[in-house]
Image (cartoon, rainbow, N blue to C red; front, side, top):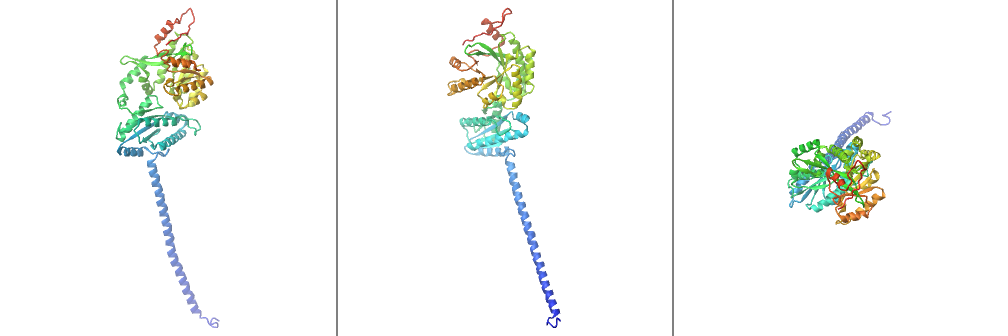
Length: 499
Protein backbone atom coordinates (compact mmCIF):
# COMPACT_ATOMS: atom_id res chain seq x y z
CA UNK A 1 0.00 0.00 0.00
CA UNK A 2 2.93 2.30 0.77
CA UNK A 3 4.11 1.64 -2.74
CA UNK A 4 0.61 2.25 -4.08
CA UNK A 5 0.65 5.71 -2.44
CA UNK A 6 4.05 6.38 -3.90
CA UNK A 7 5.81 6.56 -0.50
CA UNK A 8 9.23 5.05 -0.04
CA UNK A 9 9.09 3.56 3.47
CA UNK A 10 12.84 3.18 3.93
CA UNK A 11 13.50 6.71 2.75
CA UNK A 12 10.86 8.12 5.11
CA UNK A 13 12.26 6.19 8.07
CA UNK A 14 15.78 7.42 7.39
CA UNK A 15 14.49 10.99 7.11
CA UNK A 16 12.63 10.69 10.44
CA UNK A 17 15.65 9.21 12.15
CA UNK A 18 17.80 11.99 10.82
CA UNK A 19 15.44 14.66 12.16
CA UNK A 20 15.17 12.90 15.50
CA UNK A 21 18.95 12.83 15.72
CA UNK A 22 19.18 16.51 14.80
CA UNK A 23 16.56 17.48 17.36
CA UNK A 24 18.08 15.27 20.05
CA UNK A 25 21.57 16.59 19.37
CA UNK A 26 20.31 20.16 19.39
CA UNK A 27 18.46 19.56 22.66
CA UNK A 28 21.50 18.03 24.30
CA UNK A 29 23.67 20.86 22.99
CA UNK A 30 21.21 23.42 24.33
CA UNK A 31 21.07 21.67 27.67
CA UNK A 32 24.85 21.47 27.71
CA UNK A 33 24.97 25.23 27.20
CA UNK A 34 22.10 26.21 29.53
CA UNK A 35 23.13 24.14 32.57
CA UNK A 36 26.60 25.73 32.88
CA UNK A 37 25.01 29.14 32.39
CA UNK A 38 22.51 28.44 35.16
CA UNK A 39 25.26 27.07 37.37
CA UNK A 40 27.48 30.03 36.57
CA UNK A 41 24.65 32.47 37.32
CA UNK A 42 23.86 30.80 40.61
CA UNK A 43 27.54 30.66 41.45
CA UNK A 44 27.92 34.36 40.72
CA UNK A 45 24.88 35.18 42.84
CA UNK A 46 26.26 33.09 45.72
CA UNK A 47 29.61 34.82 45.42
CA UNK A 48 27.90 38.23 45.31
CA UNK A 49 25.78 37.42 48.38
CA UNK A 50 28.87 36.15 50.17
CA UNK A 51 30.78 39.29 49.26
CA UNK A 52 27.97 41.55 50.46
CA UNK A 53 27.65 39.54 53.69
CA UNK A 54 31.40 39.84 54.21
CA UNK A 55 31.20 43.59 53.64
CA UNK A 56 28.35 43.84 56.15
CA UNK A 57 30.30 41.79 58.68
CA UNK A 58 33.36 43.96 58.13
CA UNK A 59 31.28 47.12 58.55
CA UNK A 60 29.72 45.69 61.73
CA UNK A 61 33.13 44.65 62.97
CA UNK A 62 34.49 48.13 62.30
CA UNK A 63 31.46 49.63 64.06
CA UNK A 64 31.95 47.41 67.11
CA UNK A 65 35.65 48.18 67.10
CA UNK A 66 34.90 51.92 67.27
CA UNK A 67 31.73 52.11 69.34
CA UNK A 68 30.44 50.90 72.69
CA UNK A 69 27.87 48.15 71.93
CA UNK A 70 25.46 49.21 74.72
CA UNK A 71 25.29 52.98 74.32
CA UNK A 72 26.54 53.47 70.77
CA UNK A 73 29.07 56.06 71.92
CA UNK A 74 32.71 55.99 70.87
CA UNK A 75 34.79 53.56 72.91
CA UNK A 76 37.98 54.20 74.86
CA UNK A 77 40.36 53.29 72.01
CA UNK A 78 38.78 55.67 69.51
CA UNK A 79 38.51 58.43 72.12
CA UNK A 80 42.24 58.04 72.79
CA UNK A 81 42.95 58.24 69.03
CA UNK A 82 40.90 61.43 68.67
CA UNK A 83 42.56 62.90 71.74
CA UNK A 84 46.00 62.15 70.31
CA UNK A 85 45.02 63.76 67.00
CA UNK A 86 43.69 66.85 68.80
CA UNK A 87 46.92 67.23 70.78
CA UNK A 88 49.00 67.07 67.59
CA UNK A 89 47.23 70.09 66.10
CA UNK A 90 48.78 73.54 66.28
CA UNK A 91 47.77 75.44 68.29
CA UNK A 92 46.86 72.71 70.76
CA UNK A 93 43.73 73.67 72.73
CA UNK A 94 41.70 70.85 74.21
CA UNK A 95 40.08 69.78 77.45
CA UNK A 96 39.03 66.40 78.82
CA UNK A 97 35.92 65.90 80.92
CA UNK A 98 36.12 62.62 82.85
CA UNK A 99 32.60 61.86 84.14
CA UNK A 100 31.99 59.20 86.78
CA UNK A 101 28.42 58.39 87.85
CA UNK A 102 27.89 58.61 91.62
CA UNK A 103 26.78 55.39 93.35
CA UNK A 104 25.90 53.62 90.09
CA UNK A 105 26.68 50.32 91.81
CA UNK A 106 23.82 51.01 94.22
CA UNK A 107 21.44 51.48 91.28
CA UNK A 108 22.53 48.13 89.85
CA UNK A 109 22.17 46.42 93.22
CA UNK A 110 18.75 47.84 94.06
CA UNK A 111 17.09 47.92 90.61
CA UNK A 112 18.94 45.24 88.66
CA UNK A 113 21.38 45.29 85.75
CA UNK A 114 18.64 45.74 83.14
CA UNK A 115 17.65 49.05 84.72
CA UNK A 116 21.34 49.89 85.13
CA UNK A 117 21.84 49.41 81.37
CA UNK A 118 18.87 51.69 80.65
CA UNK A 119 20.35 54.31 82.95
CA UNK A 120 23.67 54.14 81.07
CA UNK A 121 21.87 54.50 77.72
CA UNK A 122 19.86 57.48 79.00
CA UNK A 123 23.02 59.13 80.34
CA UNK A 124 24.73 58.51 77.00
CA UNK A 125 21.82 60.14 75.17
CA UNK A 126 21.89 63.20 77.39
CA UNK A 127 25.65 63.57 77.00
CA UNK A 128 25.30 63.12 73.23
CA UNK A 129 22.68 65.89 73.08
CA UNK A 130 25.01 68.21 74.97
CA UNK A 131 27.92 67.09 72.80
CA UNK A 132 26.05 67.94 69.59
CA UNK A 133 25.25 71.41 70.90
CA UNK A 134 28.83 72.11 71.96
CA UNK A 135 30.56 70.14 69.16
CA UNK A 136 32.36 67.80 71.50
CA UNK A 137 33.44 64.17 71.20
CA UNK A 138 31.56 61.91 73.64
CA UNK A 139 32.71 58.40 74.63
CA UNK A 140 32.02 55.68 77.15
CA UNK A 141 35.40 54.57 78.46
CA UNK A 142 34.40 52.18 81.24
CA UNK A 143 31.52 50.69 83.20
CA UNK A 144 30.00 53.94 84.49
CA UNK A 145 32.67 56.32 83.20
CA UNK A 146 32.19 58.68 80.27
CA UNK A 147 34.53 61.18 78.67
CA UNK A 148 34.18 64.34 76.61
CA UNK A 149 36.83 65.88 74.38
CA UNK A 150 36.22 69.62 74.08
CA UNK A 151 37.99 71.95 71.68
CA UNK A 152 38.34 74.73 74.24
CA UNK A 153 40.75 75.82 76.97
CA UNK A 154 38.73 78.63 78.57
CA UNK A 155 37.88 77.74 82.18
CA UNK A 156 34.77 79.93 82.25
CA UNK A 157 33.13 78.26 79.26
CA UNK A 158 34.30 74.83 80.44
CA UNK A 159 32.74 75.49 83.86
CA UNK A 160 29.46 76.43 82.18
CA UNK A 161 29.54 73.20 80.19
CA UNK A 162 30.25 71.16 83.34
CA UNK A 163 27.27 72.77 85.10
CA UNK A 164 25.02 71.94 82.14
CA UNK A 165 26.12 68.31 82.33
CA UNK A 166 25.49 68.07 86.08
CA UNK A 167 22.08 69.72 85.72
CA UNK A 168 21.13 67.33 82.93
CA UNK A 169 22.23 64.23 84.84
CA UNK A 170 20.42 65.30 88.02
CA UNK A 171 17.10 65.52 86.19
CA UNK A 172 15.13 62.35 87.14
CA UNK A 173 15.01 59.65 84.47
CA UNK A 174 11.29 59.68 83.61
CA UNK A 175 11.53 56.90 81.00
CA UNK A 176 12.21 54.23 83.63
CA UNK A 177 9.62 52.46 85.79
CA UNK A 178 11.13 54.01 88.92
CA UNK A 179 12.23 57.63 88.93
CA UNK A 180 15.99 57.51 89.32
CA UNK A 181 18.26 60.50 89.83
CA UNK A 182 21.80 59.96 88.61
CA UNK A 183 24.51 62.14 90.09
CA UNK A 184 27.98 62.53 88.65
CA UNK A 185 31.43 63.87 89.48
CA UNK A 186 33.53 65.49 86.75
CA UNK A 187 37.29 65.89 86.56
CA UNK A 188 38.65 68.36 83.98
CA UNK A 189 42.16 68.69 82.57
CA UNK A 190 43.28 71.19 79.94
CA UNK A 191 45.96 71.03 77.24
CA UNK A 192 48.55 72.42 76.99
CA UNK A 193 48.30 73.86 80.54
CA UNK A 194 48.19 70.52 82.37
CA UNK A 195 49.79 68.18 79.82
CA UNK A 196 50.29 67.58 76.10
CA UNK A 197 50.50 63.78 76.10
CA UNK A 198 47.18 61.87 75.90
CA UNK A 199 47.91 59.48 78.78
CA UNK A 200 49.16 62.27 81.04
CA UNK A 201 46.15 64.46 80.27
CA UNK A 202 43.81 61.56 81.09
CA UNK A 203 45.74 60.98 84.31
CA UNK A 204 45.26 64.64 85.27
CA UNK A 205 41.50 64.46 84.62
CA UNK A 206 41.31 61.29 86.70
CA UNK A 207 43.06 63.02 89.62
CA UNK A 208 40.67 65.97 89.39
CA UNK A 209 37.68 63.62 89.35
CA UNK A 210 39.01 61.74 92.38
CA UNK A 211 39.40 65.07 94.17
CA UNK A 212 35.73 65.78 93.45
CA UNK A 213 34.72 62.41 94.89
CA UNK A 214 36.59 63.18 98.10
CA UNK A 215 34.97 66.63 98.31
CA UNK A 216 31.49 65.13 98.40
CA UNK A 217 30.65 64.17 94.80
CA UNK A 218 28.03 65.80 92.56
CA UNK A 219 30.51 68.48 91.49
CA UNK A 220 33.32 69.24 89.04
CA UNK A 221 36.99 69.99 89.64
CA UNK A 222 39.77 71.30 87.43
CA UNK A 223 43.13 69.59 87.75
CA UNK A 224 45.64 71.22 90.08
CA UNK A 225 49.27 70.00 90.28
CA UNK A 226 49.06 70.11 94.07
CA UNK A 227 46.65 67.13 93.90
CA UNK A 228 49.54 64.84 93.07
CA UNK A 229 51.09 65.24 96.51
CA UNK A 230 47.90 65.86 98.49
CA UNK A 231 46.17 62.71 97.25
CA UNK A 232 48.99 60.22 97.59
CA UNK A 233 47.98 57.54 100.07
CA UNK A 234 49.24 58.60 103.50
CA UNK A 235 49.49 55.36 105.43
CA UNK A 236 50.70 57.16 108.55
CA UNK A 237 47.74 59.56 108.45
CA UNK A 238 45.30 56.67 107.98
CA UNK A 239 46.89 54.66 110.79
CA UNK A 240 46.72 57.64 113.16
CA UNK A 241 43.10 58.25 112.19
CA UNK A 242 42.05 54.63 112.75
CA UNK A 243 43.82 54.67 116.12
CA UNK A 244 42.12 57.96 117.01
CA UNK A 245 38.73 56.42 116.28
CA UNK A 246 39.51 53.47 118.56
CA UNK A 247 40.85 55.70 121.35
CA UNK A 248 37.95 58.16 121.18
CA UNK A 249 40.04 61.10 119.98
CA UNK A 250 37.37 62.03 117.46
CA UNK A 251 35.03 64.04 119.64
CA UNK A 252 31.78 65.98 119.26
CA UNK A 253 31.62 69.75 119.06
CA UNK A 254 28.26 71.51 119.29
CA UNK A 255 26.94 74.47 117.31
CA UNK A 256 23.83 76.13 118.79
CA UNK A 257 20.54 76.36 116.92
CA UNK A 258 18.21 79.20 117.99
CA UNK A 259 14.56 79.93 117.42
CA UNK A 260 13.33 83.04 115.62
CA UNK A 261 12.84 85.76 116.52
CA UNK A 262 13.62 84.98 120.18
CA UNK A 263 17.22 83.72 119.69
CA UNK A 264 16.57 81.10 122.39
CA UNK A 265 18.77 77.99 122.13
CA UNK A 266 16.61 75.02 121.13
CA UNK A 267 19.34 72.52 120.32
CA UNK A 268 22.76 71.80 118.88
CA UNK A 269 24.18 70.30 115.71
CA UNK A 270 26.83 67.65 116.40
CA UNK A 271 30.05 68.25 114.45
CA UNK A 272 33.19 66.08 114.44
CA UNK A 273 36.66 67.22 115.48
CA UNK A 274 39.85 65.14 115.68
CA UNK A 275 42.18 66.11 118.49
CA UNK A 276 45.46 64.76 117.11
CA UNK A 277 48.53 64.82 119.39
CA UNK A 278 50.84 65.56 116.42
CA UNK A 279 48.69 67.69 114.11
CA UNK A 280 46.47 69.58 116.54
CA UNK A 281 42.70 69.99 116.19
CA UNK A 282 41.66 68.67 112.78
CA UNK A 283 38.54 69.86 110.94
CA UNK A 284 36.13 67.35 109.28
CA UNK A 285 37.23 68.32 105.76
CA UNK A 286 40.69 66.98 106.61
CA UNK A 287 39.74 63.52 107.85
CA UNK A 288 36.11 62.67 107.03
CA UNK A 289 36.86 61.91 103.33
CA UNK A 290 39.53 59.43 104.48
CA UNK A 291 37.09 57.75 106.87
CA UNK A 292 34.55 57.61 104.05
CA UNK A 293 37.09 55.89 101.79
CA UNK A 294 37.87 53.42 104.58
CA UNK A 295 34.18 52.73 105.21
CA UNK A 296 34.39 53.99 108.81
CA UNK A 297 31.81 56.80 108.69
CA UNK A 298 29.07 54.73 110.42
CA UNK A 299 31.45 53.82 113.26
CA UNK A 300 32.41 57.47 113.74
CA UNK A 301 28.77 58.63 113.59
CA UNK A 302 27.58 56.23 116.28
CA UNK A 303 30.62 57.05 118.44
CA UNK A 304 29.83 60.77 118.23
CA UNK A 305 26.16 60.12 118.99
CA UNK A 306 26.94 58.08 122.12
CA UNK A 307 29.32 60.73 123.48
CA UNK A 308 26.85 63.50 122.67
CA UNK A 309 24.02 61.71 124.49
CA UNK A 310 26.22 61.40 127.59
CA UNK A 311 26.94 65.14 127.42
CA UNK A 312 23.29 66.05 126.82
CA UNK A 313 22.27 64.23 130.00
CA UNK A 314 23.72 67.23 131.89
CA UNK A 315 21.80 69.78 129.84
CA UNK A 316 18.14 70.87 129.77
CA UNK A 317 15.80 68.06 128.74
CA UNK A 318 14.13 69.93 125.87
CA UNK A 319 17.31 70.50 123.86
CA UNK A 320 17.44 68.64 120.53
CA UNK A 321 20.61 67.06 119.12
CA UNK A 322 21.03 67.00 115.34
CA UNK A 323 23.51 64.63 113.68
CA UNK A 324 24.47 64.16 110.04
CA UNK A 325 23.79 60.78 108.44
CA UNK A 326 25.43 59.67 105.20
CA UNK A 327 23.89 58.01 102.15
CA UNK A 328 25.58 54.67 102.84
CA UNK A 329 24.02 54.56 106.30
CA UNK A 330 20.54 55.40 105.01
CA UNK A 331 20.86 52.70 102.35
CA UNK A 332 21.45 50.07 105.04
CA UNK A 333 18.12 48.37 105.76
CA UNK A 334 19.10 47.85 109.41
CA UNK A 335 20.15 51.45 110.08
CA UNK A 336 16.93 52.71 111.69
CA UNK A 337 16.73 49.77 114.11
CA UNK A 338 20.37 50.16 115.16
CA UNK A 339 19.98 53.90 115.73
CA UNK A 340 16.86 53.39 117.85
CA UNK A 341 18.52 50.66 119.92
CA UNK A 342 21.54 52.90 120.58
CA UNK A 343 19.56 55.85 121.94
CA UNK A 344 17.17 53.68 123.98
CA UNK A 345 20.14 51.92 125.58
CA UNK A 346 21.34 55.30 126.88
CA UNK A 347 17.87 56.38 127.98
CA UNK A 348 17.74 59.23 125.46
CA UNK A 349 14.26 60.33 124.34
CA UNK A 350 13.82 59.78 120.56
CA UNK A 351 12.00 63.13 120.31
CA UNK A 352 15.28 64.85 121.25
CA UNK A 353 17.11 63.49 118.22
CA UNK A 354 17.12 64.87 114.70
CA UNK A 355 18.99 63.30 111.78
CA UNK A 356 20.21 65.49 108.94
CA UNK A 357 20.41 64.10 105.43
CA UNK A 358 21.43 65.73 102.16
CA UNK A 359 19.60 65.68 98.84
CA UNK A 360 22.57 63.86 97.32
CA UNK A 361 21.98 61.01 99.78
CA UNK A 362 18.63 60.38 98.11
CA UNK A 363 19.97 59.29 94.74
CA UNK A 364 19.66 55.51 95.01
CA UNK A 365 17.90 52.79 97.02
CA UNK A 366 15.07 55.25 97.55
CA UNK A 367 12.69 52.57 98.85
CA UNK A 368 15.18 51.50 101.56
CA UNK A 369 15.83 55.13 102.49
CA UNK A 370 12.10 55.83 102.71
CA UNK A 371 11.51 52.80 104.94
CA UNK A 372 14.28 53.92 107.30
CA UNK A 373 12.92 57.46 107.47
CA UNK A 374 9.36 56.29 108.13
CA UNK A 375 10.57 54.04 110.95
CA UNK A 376 12.55 56.85 112.56
CA UNK A 377 9.61 59.27 112.41
CA UNK A 378 7.25 56.66 113.85
CA UNK A 379 9.53 56.55 116.93
CA UNK A 380 9.55 60.33 117.27
CA UNK A 381 12.95 61.02 115.66
CA UNK A 382 12.71 64.01 113.30
CA UNK A 383 14.28 64.23 109.84
CA UNK A 384 15.87 67.37 108.36
CA UNK A 385 16.88 67.83 104.73
CA UNK A 386 20.25 69.59 104.88
CA UNK A 387 21.77 72.00 102.31
CA UNK A 388 18.37 72.43 100.69
CA UNK A 389 18.56 74.06 97.28
CA UNK A 390 21.97 72.68 96.26
CA UNK A 391 20.47 69.56 94.65
CA UNK A 392 18.17 69.24 91.67
CA UNK A 393 15.10 67.47 93.02
CA UNK A 394 14.38 69.06 96.40
CA UNK A 395 10.66 69.65 95.82
CA UNK A 396 10.21 66.03 94.76
CA UNK A 397 11.80 64.87 98.03
CA UNK A 398 9.62 67.23 100.08
CA UNK A 399 6.45 65.74 98.64
CA UNK A 400 7.49 62.08 98.52
CA UNK A 401 9.60 61.56 101.65
CA UNK A 402 9.00 61.89 105.38
CA UNK A 403 10.69 65.27 105.99
CA UNK A 404 10.08 67.38 109.12
CA UNK A 405 12.47 70.24 108.43
CA UNK A 406 14.58 71.77 105.68
CA UNK A 407 17.84 73.64 106.23
CA UNK A 408 18.40 76.43 103.71
CA UNK A 409 21.99 76.26 102.48
CA UNK A 410 24.31 79.03 103.65
CA UNK A 411 25.25 79.91 100.07
CA UNK A 412 21.78 81.44 99.52
CA UNK A 413 22.16 83.89 102.42
CA UNK A 414 24.70 85.97 100.51
CA UNK A 415 22.64 89.01 99.50
CA UNK A 416 25.48 90.29 97.31
CA UNK A 417 24.40 87.71 94.72
CA UNK A 418 21.35 88.92 92.82
CA UNK A 419 18.21 86.88 93.30
CA UNK A 420 19.24 85.03 96.46
CA UNK A 421 16.84 86.97 98.68
CA UNK A 422 13.91 86.02 96.43
CA UNK A 423 15.02 82.38 96.33
CA UNK A 424 15.20 82.12 100.13
CA UNK A 425 11.83 83.86 100.49
CA UNK A 426 10.25 81.42 98.01
CA UNK A 427 11.78 78.37 99.74
CA UNK A 428 10.59 79.52 103.17
CA UNK A 429 7.11 80.19 101.80
CA UNK A 430 6.97 76.76 100.16
CA UNK A 431 8.03 75.01 103.36
CA UNK A 432 5.48 76.97 105.38
CA UNK A 433 2.68 75.98 102.99
CA UNK A 434 3.72 72.33 103.37
CA UNK A 435 3.88 72.72 107.18
CA UNK A 436 7.59 71.89 107.19
CA UNK A 437 9.88 73.63 109.70
CA UNK A 438 12.86 75.63 108.40
CA UNK A 439 16.37 76.45 109.60
CA UNK A 440 18.63 79.04 107.97
CA UNK A 441 22.27 77.92 108.00
CA UNK A 442 25.38 80.07 108.13
CA UNK A 443 23.78 83.23 109.56
CA UNK A 444 26.65 85.63 110.29
CA UNK A 445 25.08 89.04 109.75
CA UNK A 446 22.57 90.99 111.88
CA UNK A 447 20.84 92.35 108.77
CA UNK A 448 20.25 88.81 107.50
CA UNK A 449 18.96 87.80 110.94
CA UNK A 450 16.50 90.72 111.04
CA UNK A 451 15.29 89.89 107.52
CA UNK A 452 14.77 86.23 108.48
CA UNK A 453 12.62 87.38 111.40
CA UNK A 454 10.20 88.91 108.87
CA UNK A 455 9.92 85.60 107.02
CA UNK A 456 8.26 82.27 107.95
CA UNK A 457 11.62 80.94 109.19
CA UNK A 458 11.57 78.94 112.43
CA UNK A 459 15.24 78.49 113.38
CA UNK A 460 18.74 79.70 112.54
CA UNK A 461 22.34 78.76 113.20
CA UNK A 462 25.66 80.32 112.35
CA UNK A 463 28.60 82.24 113.77
CA UNK A 464 26.26 85.10 114.71
CA UNK A 465 24.90 82.87 117.47
CA UNK A 466 27.96 80.77 118.22
CA UNK A 467 30.76 78.72 116.70
CA UNK A 468 31.01 74.95 117.21
CA UNK A 469 32.17 74.42 120.80
CA UNK A 470 33.36 71.52 122.98
CA UNK A 471 31.01 70.05 125.63
CA UNK A 472 32.53 72.04 128.51
CA UNK A 473 31.79 75.33 126.74
CA UNK A 474 28.17 74.29 126.27
CA UNK A 475 27.84 73.60 129.99
CA UNK A 476 29.48 76.97 130.72
CA UNK A 477 26.98 78.62 128.38
CA UNK A 478 24.07 77.46 130.52
CA UNK A 479 25.94 78.20 133.74
CA UNK A 480 26.65 81.80 132.69
CA UNK A 481 23.00 82.29 131.83
CA UNK A 482 21.87 80.93 135.18
CA UNK A 483 20.51 77.75 133.68
CA UNK A 484 22.91 75.19 135.07
CA UNK A 485 21.17 71.97 136.13
CA UNK A 486 20.18 72.00 139.79
CA UNK A 487 18.79 68.98 141.67
CA UNK A 488 16.35 71.32 143.48
CA UNK A 489 14.79 72.77 140.34
CA UNK A 490 13.77 71.74 136.85
CA UNK A 491 16.34 72.22 134.09
CA UNK A 492 15.62 75.07 131.66
CA UNK A 493 16.98 75.94 128.23
CA UNK A 494 15.95 79.61 128.11
CA UNK A 495 19.40 80.71 126.98
CA UNK A 496 19.20 83.76 124.74
CA UNK A 497 22.22 84.29 122.50
CA UNK A 498 23.20 87.82 121.54
CA UNK A 499 25.64 88.81 118.83
